[in-house]
Length: 399
Ligand SMILES: Nc1ncnc2c1ncn2[C@@H]1O[C@H](COP(=O)(O)OP(=O)(O)OP(=O)(O)O)[C@@H](O)[C@H]1O
Ligand SMILES: [Mg+2]
Image (cartoon, rainbow, N blue to C red; front, side, top):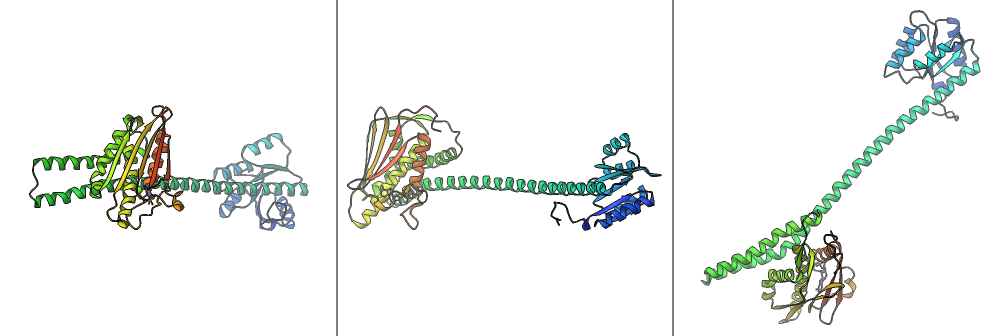
């Protein structure tokens, strides 16, 4: 409640008056009640303490000179109790004694009035301290609210950190799952091959050796994929100098069985180039681009029987940059979606064949780890992806 001057309406304010002189009690009681305060009189220190324990008043007017227990002691006891320590105490004394005043403040009083009373002065002082007390209470409750708010904010921040960790983890898992599809397909092909070979009595030592080494290559790739992507999200793996074409060749080897099965020709024209980074991660880039080209060609083969697909990879090096081009004759990319293909989860291979992660990953790796760029254009027969990596790569800079 507010009376418009910032303090509460005096009728709700209860004041405890402690004075052993009945005349003073009467005088103050009538002064305060006529001014709208609720009053509780107490004629001694011990009665005052009991009264406070029974119900906390808003303010205490406390006489200093009293038999048994003087005002100072009453005040000290009130201040020692957590429940009553915040009640403002205004001391009353007959004498205008400096030492009394000093002691009054030192035991925790907030003010001091001397007898004989000036009614106006007593009222103004009471009003001031009630207002101060209210402001203090407000401050305390605002402080509590603020603390609660800060706590909530901290909790929210924590939740956000957790969420972004989860998102990164989800991204990592989908990246790994994506890169595993290819070797899993290859392994499935090999296993089917074993069955066929057994039925035809073709299994001999050479066959087994070949099958083991082919399978191990796929499995090693799968294993390093996990390492790579763990590195991608917590970059601390050692980088090294590696040959770009060597990595492209490895990607081709991994996918060759599928290309062969669909009569897709693949060629690599290269000027050997060395760059700095994670070789296996680069292999992921090449594999994604080759896979996309293969998918585009397969789609075309569904429409045009006997269609012969090709994928051409070219590595060109000059003083400024390294340029790698992946082109195919899969028919190209519709102009209306050209601007979307690098977005995460954008795919035209519904319902189950694509996740739309491939090109997003390619772009992230090339831009973030190699400071390079990835561009796409439609050629005469199909899409062409161009990766540019600046030659001036300081070692370890592009982490
Ligand atoms: N060489 C290409 N020829 C034609 N279209 C392509 C080619 N490469 C990419 N695209 C188009 O770009 C889309 C996005 O490619 P991206 O590699 O990001 O995802 P995806 O291949 O559909 O799925 P994922 O790679 O996750 O299995 C493809 O769905 C396809 O429509
Ligand atoms: Mg893809």
